[in-house]
Amino acid sequence: MAEKPTLKIGHLSITDHLILGVTDLKIKKGAETFEHCTLQTVLKNGWNEVADALTFKSLDGAFILAPTAMDLFKSGVGIKLLLLTHRNGSILVKNKRANIEKIEDFAGKTVLIPYQLSIHNMLFHRLLSEKGLKPGRAVEKDIDVTLEVVAPFQMPEALQYDEEGEIGGFIVAEPIGSQVIASGLGEEFYLSKDLWSGHPCCVFVMRDEIIAKYPEAVQELTNSFVRSGKAIDAQPDPAAVIGGKFLSQNVEVIKRVLTYPPDRITTSELFPVLEDLDIIQRYMMDKMNIMTSLIDLEKFVDTRFAKAAGAK
View 1 (cartoon, rainbow, N blue to C red):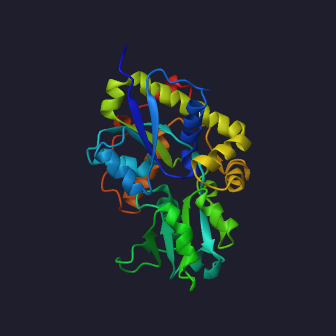
View 2: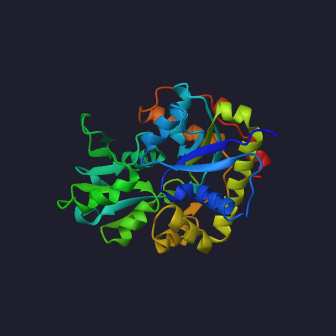
């Protein structure tokens, strides 16, 4: 009998990672049986924790921001991108106290982003640049909008304590934004799908040695994630209930994220498209200077498992 490993998969409490929660529940309820591995989901508080855990091999795989995964690969961490975990699904929220009516009103304000190497940073950069505004960190010169990295789950609190309205808002994965809107502190400014329709964001990566040693287990996981993604899009109501538990969030907030509008986040088309990933890395290198060189996406993305799983 072949060894049955326990695969530790890292994630955050965000809707982007809901396919992991659905798969986890299906296994726990016996609706799916894994023959080749046992799944262990590992909740992390922020993106730096996920990146570090992959680097130091305390995780076997993770749901992680695509640009962060590319950067890890470039720095020599042995990982492969196997699947997208969703498309769209983030939101730019304006702080009600900051009097933001148009993009130019973000000038002179601080805006919170979840991580430097994130699609959120890229989308916001593109939005500001179109209006001739320059975003950057507080230490940089001649910037119009100050960017501050804050873990997603800490963003609502940051807004709550910002009595002067110095924070213009934040751009982040759901349901953080909708949670803040429901609390009355913020208002929707843009959905990420309206900034780049169908954009990738988080991806599923596994460490090279796990892929090499347990390919059947990796296939089993990928198959389940693809099925979970299709199930979420097809049946958002039960998915919202699962999401409420898995993400420790209000079910109504999750339901809104999954259904209003219908393409706010999609989980049924998870096949990794190299051209999309290339758009991200080239923009971050040419326009943002936060990537120093391009990676060979053919070497980083392994589509075998997604193909075999029937991912669209």
